[in-house]
Image (cartoon, rainbow, N blue to C red; front, side, top):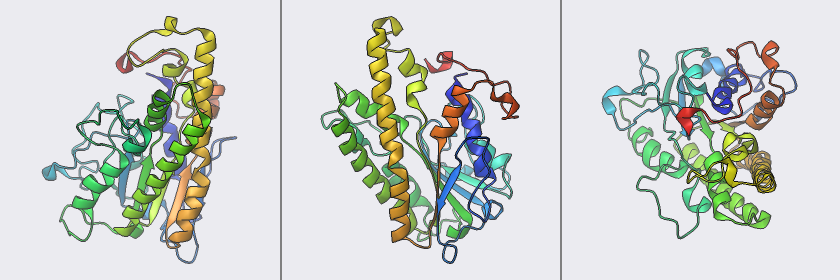
Length: 325
């Protein structure tokens, strides 16, 4: 199994220990959850006070939930609803599954709108002339066409009872957005990447504001892992199937440098986004999780099984898993 897919399990440890202090212990040398909130106004009840998760993202986050299937919504007996076994990118439980069923401190029901390959904003990340997908699955669609019509309290659907104070809204995007505009700009243009990133982050803020308007008050944003370490960028030439022999070492190094710079740019926007949103919505609590620091630490020191006791034999893997090729 690809190292990045197996590393998703480590996202859950700090998330599962978030308490009323709005901070969480982290493994050695790894920044954890940062929070922006007002102690007087925020509604964060502590991890043990959360009973609903609403999740938006892509393959690292998806559990195969079909929100259109109204007969198999999340319930105390089936907290993930009609999730499809084996449809996660890890070919097994991912961090959302563990947060819901293993490292939960209360009974949690999870509504997971994440979809493999999803971007935060398809229009902002892709070239204007690129053919649009038949199914829009970016965050805008997940919020505006999935969550809002069916799960907002204004409609009072019987399968979607929730309160803002006891719900956590999780979003994990960036990998597919960065891949899309890496493919869009050749040669790599820092100015174009900056302009695109800023437009996507503006869309991110809009989607968060939509969630807030429906009653959401507790948010967790996950930043982007070090994509330059992914086998796709260390080995593969293109998505069209050309193998590593199609790239010279110099070209491969240039690709990785461009992706590394774009990920750093993307992640640098999170503190300002969180601070600005918090200023506009003082009764909201926002966490942002530094997945980049955690993944980097694990990949740079593969013999961390002594410190991360639940790695289940994790080893450094440098090639794509056969199921991901």
